[in-house]
Length: 189
Image 1: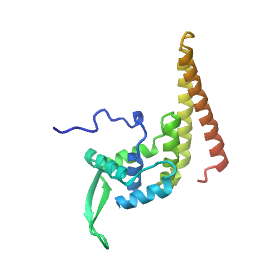
Image 2: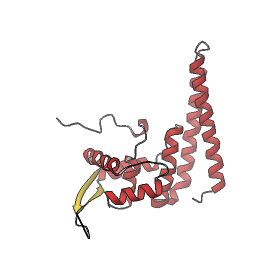
Image 3: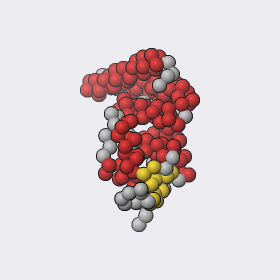
Image 4: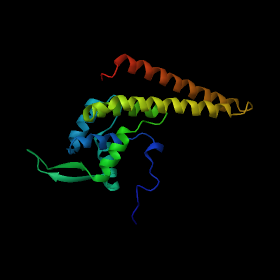
């Protein structure tokens, strides 16, 4: 029995996974797993903690989804290496993720914003100012939605109101951090 891994798949409703950053790294060029792990660990290791086994499991899921295709290439020494390249479908998914702002979630933005900026700087630095403007808009809209949701919580649900208030403060802090960080650097990453 074959499972269609794309059914119900919505990149805006998922928990952060390293799969999209891996796809976006492959926009640059095909790479073997060890090279992907090296780049990921060195340049994004403070954001994502990805073991080699997790990386290969992610690549297997991407290959099963039809977004990457792996093939073996002879190595200068030792065993052949498996090199991964994007399929047309994978290229589309990677580009959609890369240029789309993260939904308004402190956890997701903490992982995805620096990752996207790193990848955009490598692949399309001219797109960064527009991307940042759209990301800020998404945060502001998310904060507005959250405030409206909190107003609808009845007074007899103090714990729900408390949790919602905490989320508002987190997103307000995120927005303040965003404005301070990106006004300080002024577009030079």
